[in-house]
Image (cartoon, rainbow, N blue to C red):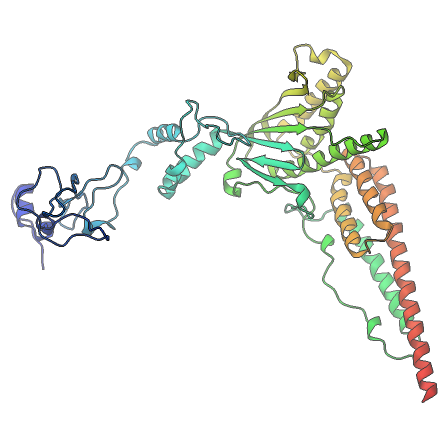
Length: 490
């Protein structure tokens, strides 16, 4: 049916246009006990401003609204509907009708101001529990992010780009946004997307060449006997490339936030909480346990720095907080050691060391007093911080040292060897000791010491290959003897 508009005013149009016929005026708006709408006719007289109801549902008072859906005739629907506080006023026939979001009609500056009242206006702690994220102690309304895509993008951009996010390293736990990850429970670290380059290709290429020569020698000796049987076990088994020779090298932390949101963050505060491990009996054991814990922290910080390096945009601010337990006397040298992984970070506008605190019987004591740089250890730390912050503020990435890049490949190589050796093999303990020494060589950037360790790794591998070769030769000789005995008996 063709719909026409007659009359010069809205009232005339509503009276003549068939699209505005409202059958709800004569139908009860009550709700049944079992669900669903009442189908009876409404009373002839009902309370003004309230939806019409039948006699049974006269106690169900619902405030009247007017449907705002735009019809084909160019006018709003105007039918009565239940009024709702937060939502568009739509009748039953137009519930799925697309409506304009009036918030988007406001200027972007006003919308951002509204988002500020709804979203957290305080820094986001790494662990906050029931801690309020609003400065007035009230609640936050992150549900605004779920309205639609445009509002989500605007509000998320405001939240992640203007708030500082805390990251806490405590033992083997790295926490952010009230979520934690334990690195000690993951036997294989997560690695970033970096290709093999330079010295690493040469190092692993030499190792693959050595393995290929050993396999070829075994094959030649096995096939040298002209009268021996064909031994299938002597045939080389074609394998896919070894796992530690492929893929990325550097470890990268996997944050609880998605990649898109984590890359939006412009301000970070990294809190390093360092407590000494449980003290063994001997002094030497305590010293070794302390160094091992210190190196574990460096490993976790390298994973964190590896993730921060992936962020393409500059980091506006990065603050570092160090907290020590047991009242360390040499807190400044330990702090300088823990800050070494930050040398790999760059493109930071404002790096800063906020505080260094120790824990004693009276609570936390701050060490960065006004005269903290007057002591010999303070002078060294101040000079180191000056160089460190200069590198971190640079827009160019620092050159990767061969010892650092080779360490992660060698760690994967030793882990692979450890998996393929018998657990009772004494070389397992040798490999664990080599990993402990290698980490010191990595942090000290000692390439000479690393080369010594690499030679030990090669010697261990040669011993494994010789033992394997001897085993294969003995098995092949035994099979040949059994074969000769059987042939002579026949």
